[in-house]
Image (cartoon, rainbow, N blue to C red; front, side):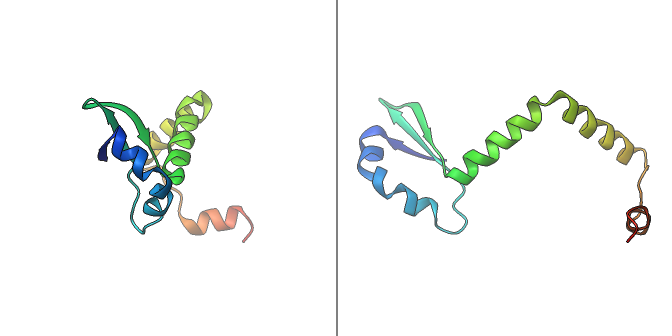
Length: 90
């Protein structure tokens, strides 16, 4: 993450959306005051992704399903694509 002092972040603020739109630009900015981090500025896509991840992690039922599926994969309990297609009537 790029680190900017508050004064520089304030100067650049209106141009940040354009810098976040550059291809491959997924990082945000750490804004500091007197050398200490006080704020993070993130591209909206990164923020949205983080919120979705937190929602999944907070969903106990979904996390149990993910953990159970992970155990099944490690145990070799896999279903082939042809079996899935057949089960769906495709």
